Amino acid sequence: MPDESRRTALPPRGEFVIHGVWLLSTDAALGDFPAADIHVRDGNIVDVAPSLDAPGVARIDASGMIALPGFVDAHWHLWNSALRALVKSDDPREGYFPVTMRLGPLCTPEDAYRSVRLGLAEALASGITTVHDWSHNVRSAEHADAEIRALSDMGVRARFSYGWGQDLPLERAMNLEDLGRVAREVGAGSKCEGMLHLGAALRTPVANPRGVVPIGVLCDECAVIRSLGLPITMHARPGLVRLLHQHALLGSDLQLVHPQGLSHEEIAQLAEAGTSFTTSPVIEMHYAQATRGEIQFQELEDAGVRQSLSVDSSAASANGDFFSCMRALLWSHKQRFGARVPLGPRRLLELATLDGARDLGIADRVGSITPGKRADVILVRTTDANMAPMFDPAYALVYSAQPGNVDTVIVDGRILRRGGRFTFFDESDVVREATESVRALARRAA
Image 1 (tube, rainbow, N blue to C red):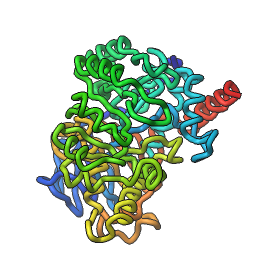
Image 2 (cartoon, rainbow, N blue to C red):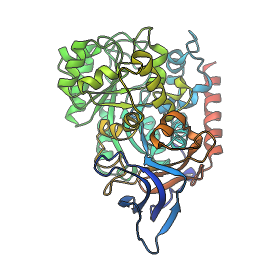
Image 3 (tube, rainbow, N blue to C red):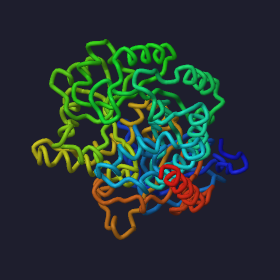
């Protein structure tokens, strides 16, 4: 496990007012304000109004900035973030799948910790305040604990979906005993001060690069996981939904990833079961027209299937820029439908915030800037050259913004990033440790 002496204390929650900001609340009842104040106390959003009188409370001048809920990433393989140094697109030997399958078995808990921290530093810089750590290289209890420790150390809100080791034989079930152990610990509140919740990531029972898990093994895993009351996530491939439907495995506790290659019948089955889908459009655009087909966002939207946005893997997509995720979905949609079926920037921002929170089951706490919810808020500068002049904040965010425009990141009332800099750790240390780790991993694999 990582050395306890390396832990850095998170900033205190405290009390403050974000003053004079252009507010995009994503709360239909509250609406938006071209100039607003947001009062935060002990991690809670106390009040939102055009002007607030809060004598003696610290004020953050946010003039020239947009405030919106922190982005919610709904699927990210954080354990392999540092492996982007070795991944070479679709090269038959050095592409994403061969590299992660070859090096995954060599990763230590320390490697996992360092790589997750690297990915989370990138996430926070992009305005992502909630991540779904889709961990499909849980090689031991120590690996699981290392990733959970990284999530806690970096101050993010998270779901940790406990998976399997990359070289686990297909006919063998994942470590359900240790999953139960983590469920008891997380449920007891011993991890992340309530910032973490647990799920399970399962292998796919249809053709895919990592092999086909027998449906009987999958059914047994699902039965145990559901007895623990945990949500499930799984990568989708053509034919998956039909098979899950045949074995009564669909449900509102299931999130599928990559909405491609779905039949009309399968989409109807998803809608009936309440199963959600998260789209990782930067990656999916690589595979459109190849083995998986087009991104079927609009078909699922029309059917009323719950959807969200996700990075997938910064080793595969090259970075964790959530603005690019929104734009990639927009580009894919425009290629398919042009202006016939509009996909506006406000809908994309909802997908990136409130709908992500709904997908992860935490929309009662985050996803909108609403009094009573937790203060997961980002401030984006509109005075930077690539953003100015700004008239419509939603269009500016979706069409123009970059991670470099994210000025302030607040998670659960803690100011983790201010003025484009982290407030509680040295970013160069995170980069150095991840670099050392992946270089040593490459040497072990040679």
